[in-house]
Length: 89
Image (cartoon, rainbow, N blue to C red; front, side, top):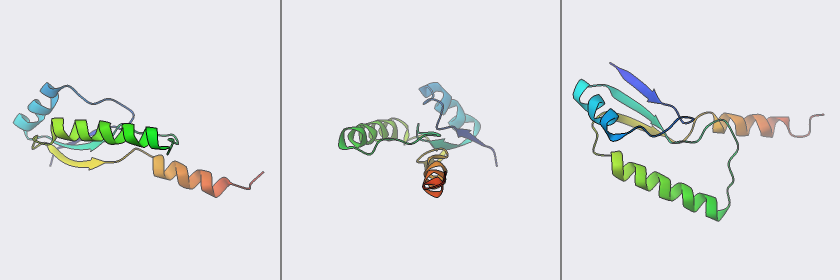
């Protein structure tokens, strides 16, 4: 199996990249563009996230090359680390 990862700290690639992956049989692990930091959880930010994800899935969901979508890169691990360090001096 051939698989590439679209890293959450990178960018959404142009359409021709996904077309080429489809043609060559390359599968993609596709992160959404959230990486390595704590993000706000207020309503305006979450609305923006919903819009971004909806737009990208509509744009790319017809590509056979996308094997899976992943919500983030290391954000959950960062949250656990921060919670684990609370109260430590």
